[in-house]
Length: 219
Image (tube, rainbow, N blue to C red):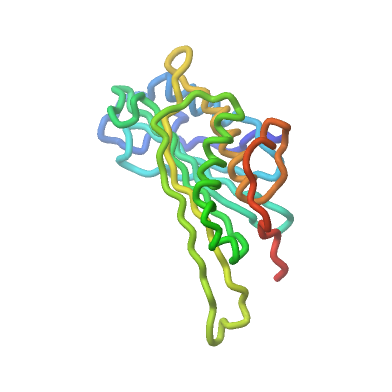
């Protein structure tokens, strides 16, 4: 497995703080959490790089985007954002929050599976649980959308996309720093799961899977 690669911008002395209203220096806990993200070792199918984090969600934020790649095909992609408010956040029940968007294209007939949303949500919680991670206040949505093509586009195959939007609070450990590297690895497991890849370990194999996952498409 390869470490998550990327670089910090020059802003905030090596860690991204997207809300400039407070000014000041980056909290050591946030710096340590971001450093852990950068050092996480992920499955080789994942390509990860830093991206511009959203503004105004928290005093400090750092974001990564990733894709599950098979040759020239992207089987799934997503974004993970680490938020930090040193004063804590009542809704988070902590000072850190992880926010994600994950999406992939599935076989069209899977859209009619009544268990699809529940199973996809179990991929997220199952990935966190399989890694033994402590978290709370998890919430989110699972959305499925089907596209059918007509007219000049009529030769295209129908497509169904599944999208998971979620956030959760990683429990803080020593020094008030959560295990962000572990959460990133679990998030990578989720991306690979939704892409239809086999589990990388026996622990991952306990997560429920869906049949007839779409593989790489021939252009």
